[in-house]
Length: 425
Image (tube, rainbow, N blue to C red; front, top):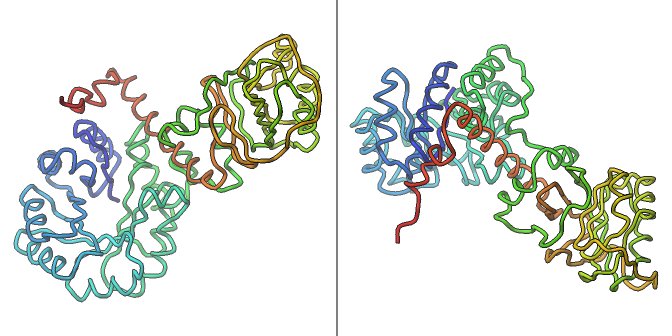
């Protein structure tokens, strides 16, 4: 088992390495992010602390193979990772430098289209290890190294490493498929207790039995509601680079979470006919999203809310006004709106249901996922729902690890080393 320390701060990486070693990790990888952030110091520190462990430098070298392998090897790396897409001349130079300075060379086949063909070519060049790697961005779309390992295991004689979202549920199947080196990143580095996380994954492999985990799980389409109920709108905002947050739309009731698929309503100022008619086509997965033009006349009230409760609708979002708030709050139903007012409009029947609208300044398409909590409302485009769910879960897990470090006596600024990363000038 190899732990991938893809963390930008060396002090945090060393703490995680310590816990992982206590849990029985075999190889320790200075991940690409750590190397880019801290340089060869990261490799030197790991080798100094763990001289009997195999130290891996994930250089992702694509050029100057000799020089990058040399500097990593002299810093203490026992294995240096280069990219399989590199030119053969770069591969050869890396292998020669590895022989000269006592390091083995592993090629990462990330982004290689014909992995079998390239693996065979690399084996002929004298490579030591091959790595089947599904990158983090690919993992967010639900991809796994499992099928790639199965495909390639009988095609080469080199030891195969596998990386990409591996945890206690997936490690045993990937190992049995042919991977001799199991590279684990987030399932260890984001765990509250890295020692225990390492032990559980080792146990799953030794017992040849998957062990359920909630950490770094890849959610299927059917499980999207589960993850949207678990993560916060803040997590989702981080996952989407602070996009798609509705502006000036606030929680009216004290229900702390809402998640469902959008039924959209476009209506005129104060015209509540289409908002009520939308309830009739809603179901138990629906959130009704209303563009009332930001008007201050109410297009929603207590009777409409009671109708939603009968249909088990998940919530309502209104770029406009709502009334009967005292009664609605007693119904424990999620409503987000721009205004509270006692004055309602008239049911004139203008507008449309289930068309593209703008609500709170955000485009909403029917079927988009609408998530709300005490911070506000955010829209997750249906075409990216699975990816964003996984990215938000990744954000949550990273925060959980930081929270654990704070509870051990540190502070947020100390953990993130904010002074070090502040912009100069």
